Length: 343
Ligand code: TXA
Ligand code: MG
Image 1 (cartoon, rainbow, N blue to C red):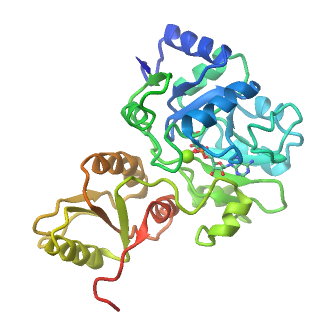
Image 2 (cartoon, rainbow, N blue to C red; image 1 turned 60 degrees about the vertical axis):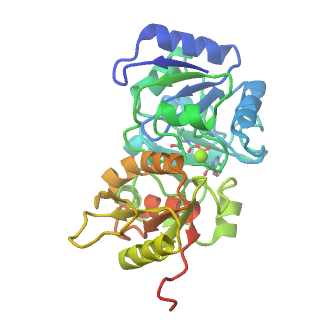
C-alpha cells in the first residue's frame, strides 16, 4: 500500500497524474469522493474491474457504480438516457446521486454483475474530478473502499485498516465531507425509485421529482432483487451492534450488559440530558442534525470497532426528514436489541 497525501481542494497535479497512470495500467486506485472513499478501476477494462472485486472480496454478481464527470460522459455508458435521468442529473450532478439506467453495450458485464442496467454518478469531490479529467473522460468504477459488508471508509486510515495487505495506491485527501454513500435512484420506469437512501436527501429529490418512490429497505428480499448487492447485512462493524428502539431502552440495555460483566459502549443522537449516564460504559453523542451525524457516523463506528467492546448499543436514530440513510445503514449494521423491559 502506498498513501499519497493530496490537498482536497487543489490536488497536486503530479499525484493525480501518477494515480491516472496506475488506472491506465489496469491497476486499482483508492480515491476520495464527497461521500466515501472509492476503490477505483477503469470501467472499460474488465481485468481491472475483476481486480476490484478480488480486493474487496465482493461477490461478482453485485454491480458497481460507474463514475463520470457529468451528463455528457454518462450518456456514453447508457443505452438510453431517460428524461428523468436528464432532469435529475441537471439538478444534482455533480453530487451524491447515482442513476440506474439501461447499460450501453460497451459497458463490460463485469461492471453490472451480468445485468442490463448500469449505475452512473458524477462525483463533486475535486480529487475525484481531477482523476476523471486526467483519464480524458474514461469512467471509473468504484465501490466503497472497504472489505465486503463492512463499514465504508470515510478516511484513508479506514481504507488502510480494512484493505490491509493489498497492493494499492491510496490518494489521501482527509475526511470525506458527507460521510454517507450516494443515493441510488432507478430512473428506468415512469416513477423514479430510490433503491438506496443516501447523502442526497429524499426531500431534496422530491423537490424536483415529487412522484419519487422509495423502496422499503425493511423488505429485505425485494430490495435485494431491485438492487443486487443490497443484502440485509451490510455496512457492519465487526463488533455486534445492537439497535435499541429508543434512548431509554439503549441506556437500560447498556446497564443490563454492564451488570452482566460485559464491556459495552453507547451511541446516542442529540446531546445528553443531565442524569443520562451508564456507570462503566462510555456514551458517544452524535448530532441531532442528520447531515452532521451522517458525516461522523462511520468514523465513530470504525473507532469503536477498534476498541473491541463486546457490544455497541445504539439508540434508534430520529425518524424525521433527512434521517433515511442513517436509519437504513444502522438497520443493516445491527441486530435488533432485545427489549430490556421484556415487553
Ligand atoms: O457514494 C457512493 O455511492 C460510493 C462512492 C465511492 O461513489 N460508492 C458506493 O459503491 O457506495 P458500492 O459499490 O459500495 O454501492 C453501490 C450501490 C449498491 O447498493 C448497489 O446495489 C447499487 O449501488 N447498484 C450498482 N449498480 C446497480 C444497478 N445496475 N442496479 C441497481 N443498483 C445498483
Ligand atoms: Mg459499499
